[in-house]
Figure 1 (tube, rainbow, N blue to C red):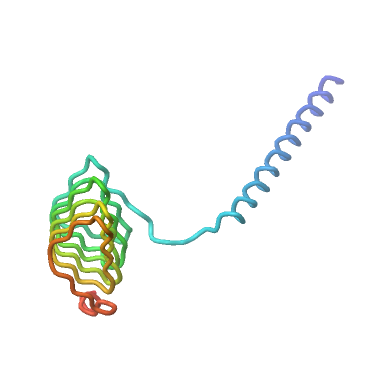
Figure 2 (cartoon, rainbow, N blue to C red):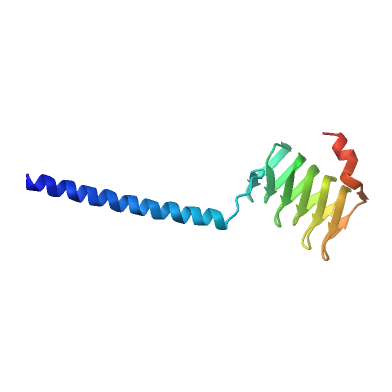
Length: 155
C-alpha cells in the first residue's frame, strides 16, 4: 500500500516537472515571437543548382532561380531572384526581379529590375524602375514606364 502511494507521488512530481518545463517553453516562445515580428508574404520556391526547367514557369510563389530555366517565366504578381550561378534563357514577366546571374531574354517588371554587380542581362528591359549596379553587364534597350502600364494591362 505504501508503495502505491509513493509511486503516485513520484508520478505527480514528474507531471509537475513536465508542466513547469512546458510553461518555460511557452514563455520562451512568447518572448521570441515578440522579438521577431512575423510577416505574412508570398511563399518562396527555389529552383536549385542541379535543376533545369524547360517551358513556362508560372505560379503564385516568389521564386529564387539557382539552376537553369529555358522558355518563359510568367510571375506577374511575384518577385524573382536570378541567383549568381543561374542561367536563364527566357522572356520574363514579373512584379520585380533581382539579377545576380545570367539572363538572355526580355524582362518586363511592373515595379523594379535590379542587376547586381555580377549580373548579366542580354535583352530589353521594360519596368517602372531600373537599377544597374556598377560592374554589371547589360546589352539591350531600357524602357522605363511609370508603374509599367503595359504590364498591368496584360494581367
